[in-house]
Length: 524
Length: 71
Image (cartoon, rainbow over all chains, first blue to last red; front, side, top):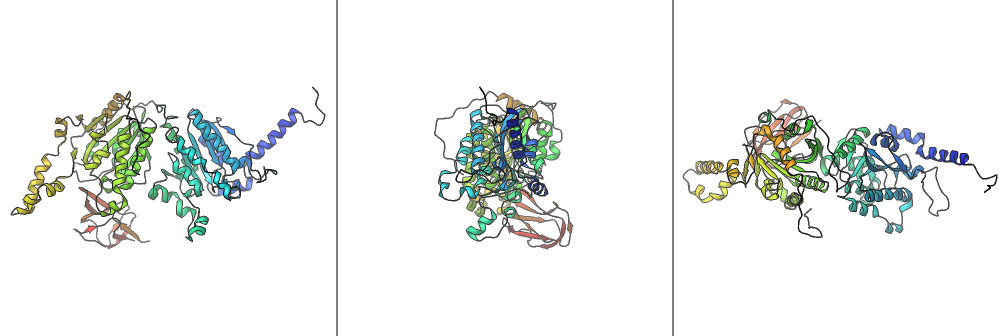
């Protein structure tokens, strides 16, 4: 078969391909890349290099770009890769998909072609049951392509994310702005680390806010990490810069299986399973009213002292953290007496419930460390809806079918004991330290209710109250719970690590089936 | 810079452990709140001089109430 002399040769075609690829790989050009760096941000491609194991990233859609509304004229120069680098590669040897928005191309705005590329990744993520990662740095939807009522056909990205939820891990790393409806990408993701100062997310960007309501603000003031990692709870972790944020994504994934049908990966450790902790009594004060830092307890219990806290700066009265016990991933929910005495409020319940659902979805066993004086009571918390938020935590801990281990260190009062996986919530093992106080309420509160009349009738009501309280205090004793076989054992605090590991290993073959239902009706 | 110190939950103000004019470091305990069967420290959000104490011992303070000022 002959070809005409004007037909380019394979070499020529390959050279042309190389030029096209180089043009796309150059992103928005040197000037925009310099601006990106001046903002203390890496480019999308630099971020990809940091995220993946060296040389494993395979790009899809490099040669895509924006098309004009008529479809007749293309604009490859203006939108290399259409502003989003998409592809797959390995993280610690395991495959994941990634969409990295390129702020040097039309401010990383989400165009129609770019969105098709990301949709393809979401589909692959579900077909192959592998995690999806977004590296977000985007002005939001590209209004030039989206304005007008063809908007009626859009929005499937969030629908798809909801279908992915609990099937594959979803991570949205905030490395720049994420304005407008696209903030629902992190809103629906499992894990959302944010870079301090440079990242932000809000349902409406500052300009849209001004147009809609007249309020003057900035993207940073409205939606920076100082808001979302401390107040709103949408952000999971505040990191100093892009490399630290991407490292956090990699670390997070080490605790996760690739999908909900797999077990999390194991990591061998030289840390002995029966390592005793001899300084527990120095950390946990004998005075039951005194506070201490539960993080110190957790650090001593975990393999190699390695604790990966999620939402460490939000609702600090409860700790949610990934650790390993004898090499296996575990999610720890621990009260933090240092903050609000460890008492639970709406944000603490919300944070813990979400974390329990996350761990349960991905087969990560749960360990509860209890030192909880109860839920905060009073007019303020009732206005905030403490009942439905508390109920949400009850709901999550009741639904969880992964292995559950509960250790009562000190206080375990009222509904606080329930939501922290008390006996009624099917812990596979429930143990207490000798210092444990398990009761519906404290002695003083109890006598005021039980002995109201007797105290009022006494010659010396204060003395009578103290006397009754002392009597009630006698009944708050972990050995009573143990004697009724309501706790499995009272343990030496120094043995807590070994006891947790024994319990987790004992429950490894656990299979729990609940009654069929379409789904429950969880309080939110 | 003036920093207002707020109570993070409702409770009975049990003890004030600093005095007016005292220089404190960040995280130093300023007062102790008795709430939820616990002695909960109210700590300095920043270092500085305590220029105002707005509550007295035995008083019930509300969540978010300003209890002291540090400059």
